[in-house]
Length: 265
Image: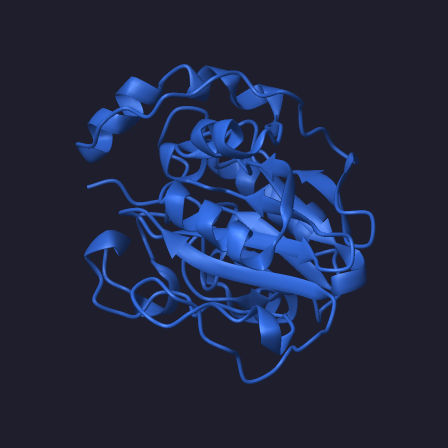
């Protein structure tokens, strides 16, 4: 079974492969106003213990068989949102946008593996929002049938992105912008999104809590991913909160000091 993690170690001691783990998925983090809480029931969201803000909405929740962390960032004042890595469960994502009364501005995809990009086109058709993906991952996008075969799932319909995600590009919302950091290694088009004012990094499958992305799939390069992390991500402030593509949240400080793949030899 396909796993996004490096074969030698999975985050927080989770057994390989990740999708067979019985450990709980990443808890949803919400920054929202009380009147915007989701209703109870299956697939609902719960109020966090901290990180409360009247205007910003930040929700991260696992979707699909590989439990890809999909992130919704919204500006309640502007009535706009972005969604990052809508790999699956598009109806759930779209329903949440509707509940929050937000218009989707961008669909950002950190890389073109099926569990991150599989629902992007469907979400675009429902919302009209453009899809942004780094052009170096277009060959992987063209391999969607093969990727589906790795998992034994139906092949999702995909299309070329509307825009690229290039190094240094500004994306996101007017009040909550992000800078694109190109971090090849897991794939050639892998990117991370640095929301500097929020002290937050969406890391895709480049960096995990206690691990890194696997590099034995098409487009992967083990030396590249280490260089990307050490030269680009570890240069970020210690307090930067890292939301990886799978598994629990971590910080740059924790990964710099404890990640076994990043020990300086």
